[in-house]
Length: 273
Image (cartoon, rainbow, N blue to C red; front, top):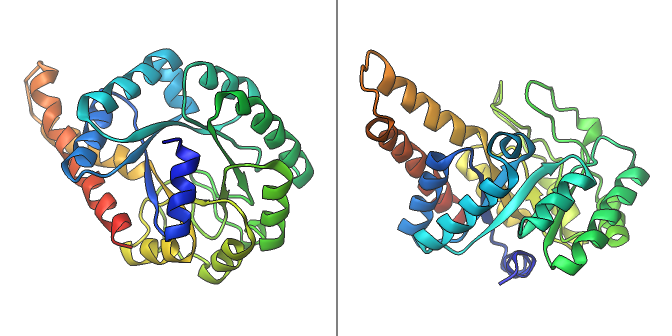
């Protein structure tokens, strides 16, 4: 099943998919062990920095091979693609889904850039995601003046034909300095007029009940990244403190387990929304 078909199916059911970023073999294994253990589908995401680290071909082959190996229904997605050129490379590498992030450009320029990617992706039959409004990046404060407007969301989706749309409703990338507060009223208004599934970026640190309410109000794709990195690295740091073992094959499995535990918890929260 194409990802865009799955997302539309879940949109109609008021359900959501977890989209988890992976950074190396170990985080990839942790994500897929969790998904396989409770038999739920998952989107595997790769950011531009991860692709620069791993290499596009290596990362894509890792993701596809691991999905088959673990027997998990899943899709490979480019997260926050900054250019049409990067999108093109990911399409050629066999990605199932791509995001073009022109959210910091003007509304009209965002439409033009997104429309270019939508047309480029059509022969590949892949899902295309864009962002409207501004979801704060790491270390930035969220500005309510940059939140997505319902009318703009509808105009943007209709003008571009984008398959799914990330919206700014109060979430932010990275960990929160204080408990996040999502604008559920705004989300419901956007969902009532936007013709495509909606995406929540910056879910790390959002309370479970708030995440579930967001799904009920119209979120269909939930992105998770920071918590995954944190779970892996914190556990690895604990293991390595005073450890003289040099065989990483003996050290890493416990950190993989930490990722598996986190992802299993998130999948259960999202699936029980």
